[in-house]
Length: 450
Image (cartoon, rainbow, N blue to C red; front, side, top):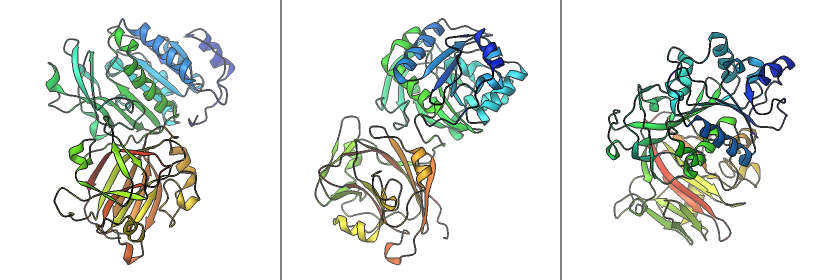
């Protein structure tokens, strides 16, 4: 578990908890992950709350975390909250905490606690600005329960990594008083043309995450119906949100705006890329590219018959996953060429393989500068799980973020490898290396000096 350490609960806090929480009341052990489900209502009460509690308990039993449940706001004390890695607000409504309880929860979040909001958690504590910021947006209205299409925008976050790019499901679809996109990472949004009653002018987030005042927050607008909690896809969505909130999975939850796709999972977008050298990449039905053979490289040439210009000042984001001990990298700053060694000799590789020497491992500028290994290790998800790189080039400065954590800051001094005008490529390293990529996108930035 990578959640921050918690202060052990006092005997007095444990005594308070025994009277108000269903489930075990023992102190949190050093290696235990513990989640509190809070479902107090002071307004409308959802009849799906028991199913929601049962689902989170089952997810905990299968996923290795302990679940307590309560409707007693007395559980919100500094000592008691320190027992938990995350608190799930399950369709809470209205004013459910007094000033002292709010203060304890604010301190909990600021000390690194996790928050998960489900459905009517957005219909809660309208006069508490801290909570409104944590949840991300307040409820405004909803139409009748009906099917809708959910567009999955972030397919690297554990809450959405297992979902298709479009997710069709039935629920009660909330409209919100504000759009969280400017301050949170939108994971999924509603296609308002697929149902009636959407009021957010075509940009309708329905699930998002953010780092907030020192803590981690995940919210999903789904979960009104009892049937939601029996749906395997929705349960996996919840599990991924909880895993992020408790710190057992890392994700880039910074807001993302202004990017355009270079590869969006379609064969049409792949036509702008060229294979240099041996090997290839296979495109799967879910929009994932997976390497095969090599040593070669798939590089972005543009849509014309001749390679287009390179990029000079930009933020490049992409999602990647290794199957095991696999080798690959992302190349930047090289001239157009169908020789993969041109990129090796004239550009820079941001390494993916996590098992080599420090200057040749995940996050390193290969053979030039190691990543911050401690930060890298905290941010890195294991084989089989998706990671997100941001590679930002401004002048001759190259910075690397892994799952939202900056792990490398390198400045080029070699004129042969100038970063001011270069291409982007994905390496297929060899026959034994299986590395997958998806959602390659770029935002061009204003040109700055070094």
